[in-house]
Amino acid sequence: MNDIYTIPLFVLPHYSFSISLEQSLWRCEVHWNGVTQAWYKDLKGVTYPTLHYPGIKLVGGVNLIQGLAIAELGQLIMVDTTGDNHDPDYDNIGTRFLLQYLGRTAPVVYM
Image (tube, rainbow, N blue to C red):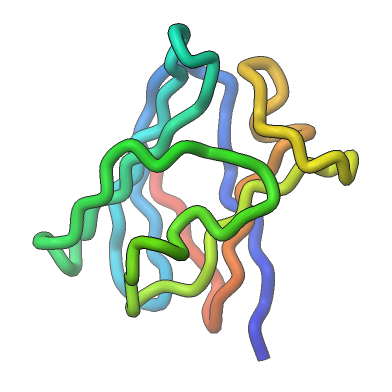
C-alpha cells in the first residue's frame, strides 16, 4: 500500500535540502524564477550520483517526475489545497500549495 507524505517547502527565493526517498538520498534545490513567475526544483541523486534532473517546474495536479523515468522513485505531486489545480505562486508555496510524495516508504528531510 502506498502512503502520501508532504515534503516541506518554504517561501524563500532559493534554498536546498536533502531528502531520503525509497531509501535513497536526493539533493533538492528549490528556486523562484521572477521572469517566468514560477517555482522550479532541481533533483540530484546522492545515492545515484549520475541521476540529475534540473529545472523541474512545480505545476499543480500532475506527477512532476512522470516523464523522467526515475525507476527508484514513486510520484511527486504539487497539490493546490483549494482543489483549483493552479500552479503555485510565490507567497503560497508550502501552505496552499503542497509538494506530496506518493511512495512505499516515508521520506526523511535533512535541512
